[in-house]
Every structure is written in structure tokens, then in C-alpha cells.
Image (tube, rainbow, N blue to C red; front, side, top):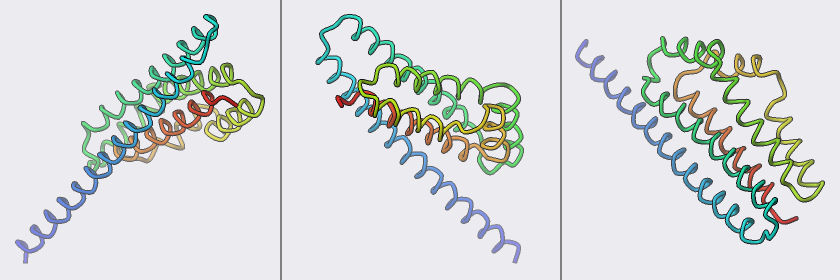
Length: 180
């Protein structure tokens, strides 16, 4: 009976590990696609501009978005080193994001990028959409949001949350680059 139980447990663990790997691969593919779309939108917009000042603002914006995304990628890379099945990692993630300030740094980088997106947008409609997206993402103070998002999650959950923020940042960024 013990052998059957151990075999069942190992089989379940392998299935979970396989599902986790598939989820991580899907997130990586999605981020690659969004990064390419953003780079393409940036290049198209840059090629249309003639004003040097506007080009510099656009370059600054591109750098802010990429910086925020590299930061999020590095956090996800650290999360990948943790075992999502180890319950002690939940406390480590809470300490990292809530008490050690990684959550604040994450939110500040995203907010800075979004605020600059508003700055480079052409139309009032774009600016309003970007502001509404920012307000929906950050409807609470940073500390409260970090506590809500990261206090009871494992490493895979933290990676998925960060992936969601990256997706929204790219979506907002491409909206800001549209010629409306």
C-alpha cells in the first residue's frame, strides 16, 4: 500500500511539474511576442518623427519600458529558482515583495513608465485611456497592493502576477505609440 501511495505521489508531482513548466513556457512566449510588437511599434513611431526633441522623448520612453521589463524579468528569474511546492517560499516571497521593498520598486518602475506614456501620447483620448489603465492597475497604495498580491502566493503565482503587469505595461505602451 505504501509503494502505491508513493508512486501516486510521485506521479502527481510529475504532472504538477509538467503543468508548471508549460505555464512558464507559455508566459515566456507571450512576453517575447509582446516585446517584439512593442519594439516594432517603437521603430515605426520613431521613423515617422522628424523632430529631434520628440525622438529623444520617445527614446527615453522606450528605455523606461525596457528597464521596467528587464527588472520584472529578473524578478521572474529569481522566482524560477524557487520550488513552487515549498510552502516556506510563500513567506520568502511575502518578505521580499512586502517588507524588503521589491514590490515598491516594481510598482514605481511601472508607474513611471505609464506616466511617461501619457506624456508622449498624442491625443487626449489616448491620455485618458492610459490614465484609466493606470488607475485600474494601481487602485491602492503600493504597500497595500503588495500585501494583497504577494502575501499568500508561491513563486509561480508571483511570476504570473508579474507577467500580468508586463502584459499591461506593453498594452499601455503600444496604445501610447499609436498615431491617433
